[in-house]
Image (cartoon, rainbow, N blue to C red):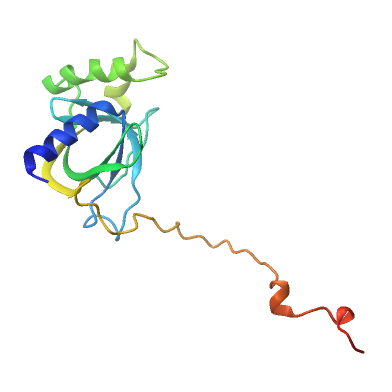
Amino acid sequence: MEAPAAAALIDEAAKKSDLLWLRAPAAHGAGHARSQPVWHVWQDGAGYVVSGGLEQPVPADITDRAVVTLRSKDKRNRLITFEASVTVLAPGSEAWETVVPTLRAKRLNLPDVAQATERWARESTVWRLEPTGVVLETPDDPSVESHATPPPPSPARSRVPRPLHLRGRPSKNRGGH
């Protein structure tokens, strides 16, 4: 897919959906990092995410880069996966003053509409996710990897008896003595 077409697909898909999938690039994490759904607002060619405090969590290792996957709103299939540069908006900055009113207006079930801006400045982080131009997956060129994340390690084990067909028939049911 050509770069202008990919940029148009990113812009259109991000505007139509309020949810994107976010993970750290493979270089930052161990192998295949777990993607996490996050609520966002798309404005001026970038996605904005609020996290921390009472807000949603984001992957801890997205300090400068992130991998973003956008899905189709109607069929929910992966449309495009791209790399984004990650920056933090400083409270009170010009970018903060431009974006935060939109974030506050679009945030569903906000517990404190009047104090949300002050609370976000105090205990949350507003992230800016801007596409870098590196596209990892498109509808024309889907990836062939499974996208399945292995389960997290756990010391828990299940003890299950062997199936009947591995033990054989019980002796009382056998035909002889």
